[in-house]
Amino acid sequence: MQRLTARNTANSGTENVAHGTGEYAAAAEPQHAAERAARQASRNAEENAAHESALEDVPEHEYEYEREGRPAPASLPLVAGAMLGIGGVGAVLAFADIASSLRAPFTLFFLIVAPASAIAAALRGVDPLSRPVLAVAGAVALDLVVAYVMLTLQTWSARGGVVVVGLLSLLLFLMACARRLRRHVVGVRAARAHG
Image (cartoon, rainbow, N blue to C red; front, side, top):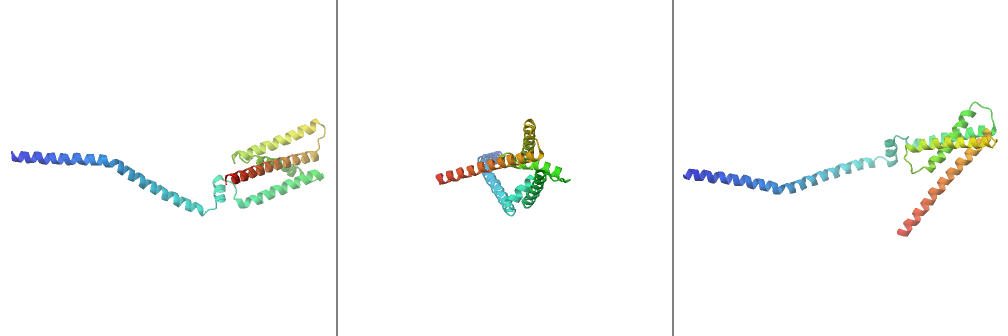
């Protein structure tokens, strides 16, 4: 009888310990979850800091251009200068009415690139991938409108078309620059008013 009582006491003590351990585990679970979340957040912060320090070694403009698949910034002035030179030669050949095998392709290049550049400058807020498509489409539309109006008025000439497209392109570009300058001035005034 004493052995049975001792066994029952031992069994009930083990059950109480197991039951107490389960209650402790259930009570401690939120604390453990919070500790795990804190450790994970700490690990994430360390990884982010390591990633940001790695990005600091790469100049920001190079990273953006490589990410978007654009040419490196060092080549942009070279490309812009070549485009300006080709377009300028085309405009001069057409305006001076010089007979050359380069006259037609260079003039066509000018008639597309000059208005496309002006339209692209006006579309600064548009998605970078959509802007060239819209600019070229706008340039073709502008060329067609100029040709249509000149043909309707019976004043068509290659020289006059080049001049009109060049002037309209310059006007669009100046309007875009003026709008950007006005926004900058308004931003500076707002910053001074709040500062």
